[in-house]
Amino acid sequence: MTKNYREKTKLVHLGRDPEDYYGIMNPPIVRASTIQYKDLETFETKKGQKFTYGNVGHPLSRHFEDAMAELEGGYRCVSSSTGLAPITASLMAFLKAGDHLLMCDSIYPPTRFACERLLKRFGVEVEYYDPLIGAGIKDLIKDNTAVIYLESPGSATFEVQDVPAIVREAKAKDIITIMDNTWAGGLLYRPIEHGVNISVCAATKYIGGHADVNLGYAVADNEVNYKKLKRAHVDMGMCPGSEELFLALRGLRTMKMRMEQSAESALKIAQWLQGRDEVQKVYYVALPDHPGQALWKRDFSGANGVLSFLLKETDKEKIRGFIEALELFPIGSSWGGYMSLLQPQTEMGYRKTVPWKEEGMLLRLQVGLEDVDDLLEDLDQAFQVFNNG
Ligand SMILES: Cc1ncc(COP(=O)(O)O)c(C=O)c1O
Image (cartoon, rainbow, N blue to C red; front, side, top):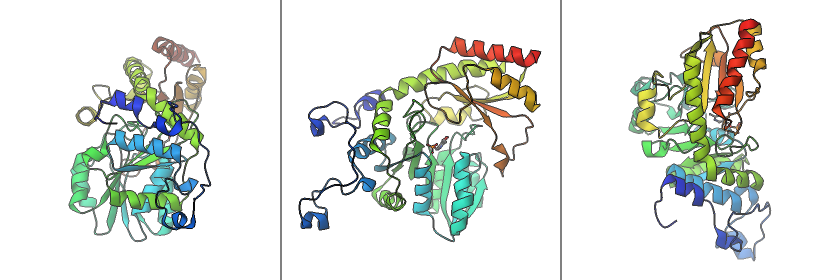
């Protein structure tokens, strides 16, 4: 594009090149593993060859990656077959045996499992830090600290990190910072503008938006870091298929509207839950009493539709009664799609720096695009079942 357009315009226009496809507006699904070369010299030098092999990149991955690099304000992007893949790719790209990794304690649980099961086996020292540590990260940095990993707001409890403060300390010691930007959908926050080196995101959530795609990407801040990232990504064979990329590009066009609608409904639901006698605590960044409000308002341009809450009741059978009485919030492990879901958070016990002490079951709601009054009525009738049961 010739001009630095506003976000909504970018979402509509990025990641397309009609001239490459007879003027067709949306890049069509192009299936490509093998790519032919015109002669030996081209094969050897790759000169003038746009693509070399499917795993290294193909037309749809190029369109999606160009769009995300532009939206995130980075140098270049790699796309991958799940949201977890760019996380492991970026960790593997910047860590080696003997390195020390500072890992945020409120991360998406499978990121923790990858640290525990994969990185530790390859000799990486993993230390978890309190997500609210801010500039205090300085005291945890060692001579062998190679990477500081952030995720903000944190998974399930939405701790908002002071990213610029952490990045300042990292830069002072030439430490790479990687941030999971999935909560923001790559849109509500721009980690690279705040000095982060690698921004990773599960496009599975708001970008795909329709609960039918696993996809991820990582954007690097400069050429050197991009090359390291790309090498690890190719070495681990993480390239996504064209159909997923096609669906993600389609999702991009409406993502902002979907996120805004979900956030509006989520705030209403969060406030309504706060007024219920059965509820002990509600976790949602846009609530005025959320502890991370000030940082969130300083750094983010909006909210998404994900919130959690704790009931006062701790008896599992009674909680089961509430969950199973809901009609519009089926149990499901994801978020960012068009439909509302509930996910019981069963993996809170892993937290190390700020151990999870609550007895009850934390319930996470993904608020979709239904009429919010129907969602509230559904919650209300489930509370009636719960109170009578
Ligand atoms: C914060 C966060 N990052 C990454 C992922 C990984 O995405 P995927 O399930 O496509 O691997 C998820 C999925 O729930 C997530 O919530």
